[in-house]
Length: 330
Image (cartoon, rainbow, N blue to C red; front, side):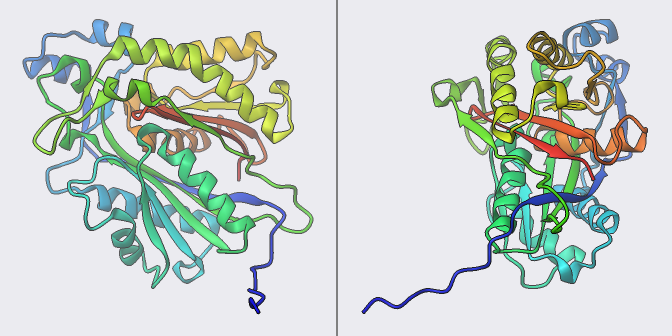
């Protein structure tokens, strides 16, 4: 006789309960990059990617340092103690080595004891993958609260003399705490619209452990500007809302022209003209999996978004991987 296995009690839905972010102190302007010997100008960088400045970590400032800082801030924002966190997920593609993972180190740093801790590598889509996984864990009853962090130290993997990458990539971390929706609350994290385009895997690649990141910028640009708006619309449909219900659009901060192209297509399809669009790329650069939570936390601090706003998140990047979901902001 096969025994009846006990199952966790299901939860109706999950919500984001807190946000936090961390960036290095060192601000690097376009003029700084030009002065370092790279053949570029402030005007050239602004015109092509929209970046004005970005943050670079010190040599002794690690990815785990930034992730721990952002995670601790998210816990404080959610009003939770480390002992109330049941799992830690770190989305990253720039750890200096594959073992040990970042999540276990972050959990120990912030006082989360003996909790499941694992990394997710979906590059720039990683935070959305992590957020979706956390929401599913909460809904399935596997965890009451999950800490999700997107953290990157891209400067470890960028050739400072490669104009196609050194002007774009930067360092930072952003975090969110995911918890169950209360009985009188609707779900606050919609289903994930995710996928991949493995036939384009070689367009963004680190060939081996002794190499820097390489990307075919024009190919990635064409892919993102044509394929990501439909992914965003799929996420909206899966969440059971309309484009007109979206208050805030937060695409991965890859390039301001890509962000603006996605917003333009969504507005043509029915999104509101007053929809707030994240533009954190201008001052933070491209921070891969950290870019979406960084942008959210910065926009909230600036008063550009409010609690209860409906936000559409869209991550996309190396893999090529992509994911989007609709969330209600805490």
